[in-house]
Amino acid sequence: EAQVTQNPRYLITVTGKKLTVTCSQNMNHEYMSWYRQDPGLGLRQIYYSMNVEVTDKGDVPEGYKVSRKEKRNFPLILESPSPNQTSLYFCASSFYSSGTDTQYFGPGTRLTVL
Amino acid sequence: GNSVTQMEGPVTLSEEAFLTINCTYTATGYPSLFWYVQYPGEGLQLLLKATKADDKGSNKGFEATYRKETTSFHLEKGSVQVSDSAVYFCARKTGANNLFFGTGTRLTVIP
Image 1 (tube, rainbow over the protein chains, first blue to last red):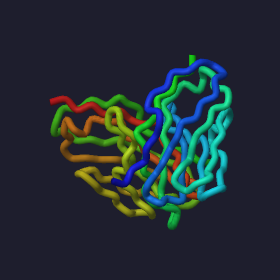
Image 2 (image 1 turned 90 degrees about the horizontal axis):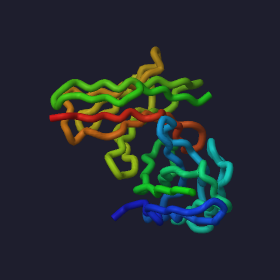
Image 3 (image 1 turned 30 degrees about the vertical axis):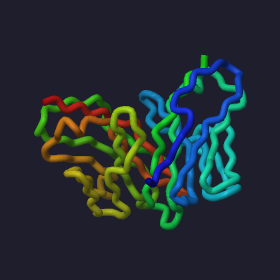
Image 4 (image 1 turned 90 degrees about the vertical axis):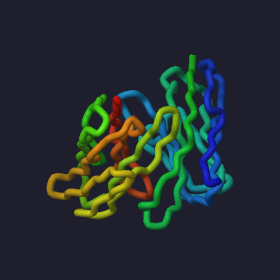
């Protein structure tokens, strides 16, 4: 089954404790992206990647890192989480041909930073 | 710059009512436009899209027409069902393959 998986689905952590949220897709997509969803703000893009070893900042990259060492994986790293990073996070992927290909979203990771 | 403005919710309708969710965008040129739907506890799914002016996207009884004159892409459905209860996001393509989303509109349909 074609899908985007994220782990963990739920995480409660404390300020300053490094964490990684994994994202994996099995559709051989070149493009992958991370978003955060906050009430009243919709989805905002954190980082994106157009292919292996190619990453770039989105609209709200501060406090986050990403890497793209393999085509299927695009982990999101919070080196020193803070309470303002409490949010619902979504990973997405798509082909990158015409630029209008459908983005497929993972189920989300709900992060709480205390 | 990039901007997508959606009608604020929440919206509550009775089953079989007509639905309109307004969406307008700012752009130089004619970006591709999308509607995504988020059912409770799930990630977003593409509902429909339009890639050029005057295109009409449609799926599952929903429709939206890309109107360049009014820079709008309003979502409509003639007869909503309880199963349509979800959050709906309008989005436009920006550079690369990125999407810029509106703030979302929560729809609740009551029997």
